[in-house]
Image (cartoon, rainbow over all chains, first blue to last red):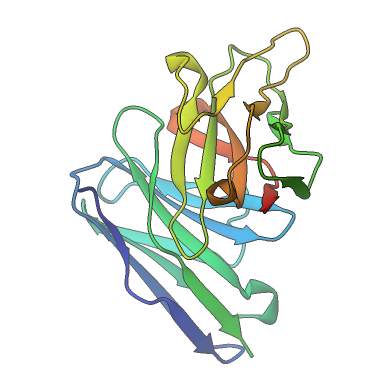
Length: 111
Length: 108
């Protein structure tokens, strides 16, 4: 069974904190993605990675960065959390085809 | 630029009624479209893709290039179909552009 695992289901952080969201996949997929999911806006791509140490900006990268030191792990970093980053964050991975496998999501609240 | 529009945020039908969730897209190339579903407290998962032309859980979707649409249909809705549905368009680099989603509620 394919698995994409996000380290936390719920997080509460203070404004200005540096926040790390971790994602691990066990399918040996090259592609990994971070989305945020907001009501009415659907899923918006923050960053993606095609390979280790490789990253590309998605549609809404401002205020975020990523790290991919190992193939199976893709981290999303909020450099200085703000209240408008309160959201559900979804990690996904895919192989050659665009079918993406998603993690269970991390609901981040910034207070 | 590529865009996916789901005009209905909420669709409510009675069990046994037909269902159509609308999806329109804009894309300059040859489109490849998907429907994803998220049941309550479950992760987002692929429901179907247009290239496979398959029926999953009684759902079908036909790509209409003339109308730039990829509507999801089911002739007889079931309560277990209640979920959030997202239409998605493949773009360069195996990335997906998602629509805003439609919540389907099937009432008993």
